[in-house]
Length: 324
Length: 266
Image (tube, each protein chain N blue to C red):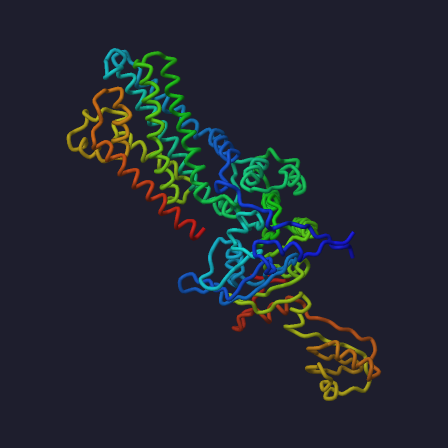
């Protein structure tokens, strides 16, 4: 059996011959009065990608997500989702979202909430099955107002999956969850995206972006400041450090190696900061007697601070891993 | 590494639902939700029935004729109208609570169109209004004091019910204007004032002249006169119709205006 080609299903899509991207933003601006929340964003997300929007508050993450979901329209530029207008994709049940808070009626039961939501779609998965998979099978008759925060979040997640969407959007989905809750939430998302779903999530938890996204889009003040895998983002901000044991080296000649930015010699240990660590490592191994080679990337957090810092001396982060 | 499994979803096979997502499952759940709320049931069904039992049954009213029936029947109609407008206002004002809870925003992430949402709210309000009218009329039948020809039970009951649509629009309009969970407390108070102005509790001819004139402009005045007209056999005044239409235009216009700016922003 061969795996179906991801692209083949796009050819008959509403976009016609054009290959439909999960998300396509072109020259998007969003202004609220005199405030420009999104300043010219171009972004394409292919089907099946898991993408994190990472940035401090006010970076434009939520504004961008609102436009992808058709909750607001761009002031300028174009947004298309799966080759159609966001509202059309929503109406077909192809896009769904898990919001941070709210969005539930306290006086409905868990099962009623799910049945209500499912009835609105032309195509939906069986309510029982979706609730079971979200771990809500035992509390279907409980009033939503009596559910814990974690149970409510699982219900939001279940509601988002009822229409079997192609694109799942999560706006800071684990805010307020404990470590265990966060871990099991992401395990469920991982399990789910193994079925080929595209997932876009906004977060200010660095480790979340690092651990769960294939790709990180780093935002700052309404613009994309970096876009790549988490290791690319780290390298972009800080480069890598090649560390080796090499007797009798001098800093001047080491820093002349192609790909090296600067070098430091500490006794028999040399430290070379490199924008292209591969070239430096190859040179050291092929042309010198260097051994015990070690290549390290600076923490994503450092990259984050370097790229999103306001430049006024105020660090963008408050404590390890969490940024505001 | 596991073999990637790709779930094939044929995008062209997915369709938007008909009627903007309007369906009977939702309507049924909305009605159940309202009937499950004890306070709602108390205010929209128990209270008007109690008012009718307290004020509509003394022997003087039973003996005194009013048009084709007796005064007791006229009071029953007034109390049914009071219950119905409480019910439909309550139903319409639910949008306030749903907006505060973020439910309206959640619904914007489904195919449910805003117009279908409003239709569901209005219909739910009307179902509750019908229950309220039936409660008063059934109690009226059981106690046997109000008298009027059978066809008038049907005609006045239906008039009250259909007329209460005006207050579904009122509730909706206020639900959008007042973003508070306590919206019904404010509106219940307003409805008591409207009920006095409309002559539902005390006949207007017992008011001083100035108050009578002012009462003619309040939102329950025209409607109350119109629903009593078949019983009283006095014919309808154009002023009553104008009163109802002007208030309907104001409430519906206000609801549409708020609703539009709400869906723009969400």
